[in-house]
Length: 405
Image (cartoon, rainbow, N blue to C red; front, top):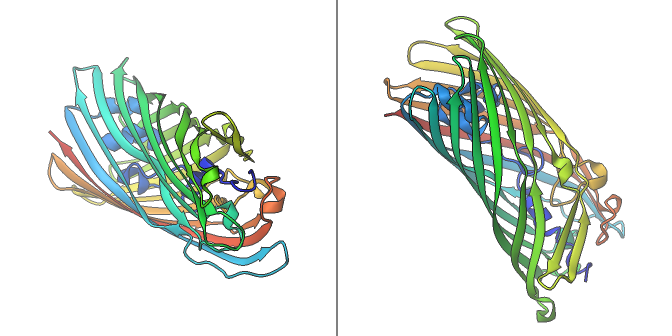
């Protein structure tokens, strides 16, 4: 039975951003921050979209503010030198990861001189991966579809003229549809579908040394999901209700922002993502009978970014950024669902201030992922032994609208 379903089931959702951010994290929550490759995102607070990174920054948004935007994610993942356990080379694949749109929205309101509230809607995880149904490693996975939506009510308080604190509640919904080959060499597939709603939290602080310089710290808790769903196979004897436990990681970040003069600003960011909480994935029938067990053993990862902005005139601002993002899955734990590797971010963006109330942000990012080698025999998860080489990259186009009431 374990051979039947090595569906890393919700491990399959972890392939969603193989060339985007480490593991299955989507950073695309602010077009303004994207322009700087998310450098200084924890301290930026240039508009309300930055609240996703640090709730304390809401105190910089006077009155009532609204942001709406989205990012078009255009990934490219090529798989070459595909070889199975018999030594037979199989067809290459050039379209494994599919394009997607990640929307985001936030609104904030100033209650008084010290207290602020906000509500954010984000898609922190989500994308589509798809192999040919009859590929050599089809029992490790064929199609993975994931949608994760997080609603975050937040509040912030200005403790002093310099220090602000903030907190929020993560209400996270996940839905997944996963397929894999039912038998080696055949195109029949098994399907797992499931969803869950679970809670987490976040806290943050921001210290403004003066009008030109500020520093922020933030922590987002892990979210423990118990995903419930159905297993459907060509053999009805295996069909039934299933559940799986999946923990999305906690994150700690620090950001710095400084205005050098009226034209130039610089910023930097560090983030630690605690992926080591994702060690094993167990899938069971509703009665507790095991379906599969998969070792993941991911490592904690680091994200580093530096950026600069140039105020061209009263209406236009130009942004630049460079970042390095560490992979969560190493060679011995890399699966076809998650061809993860280290990546470099190159970003630029523009802000256009139409008038005192309305502004727009546009950002473009190119992400180069280091080449990744796959050898399923190293993972210890059984199933087909397959080796392959991956070459991944992704382009991001972000746009957003900001309005002050």
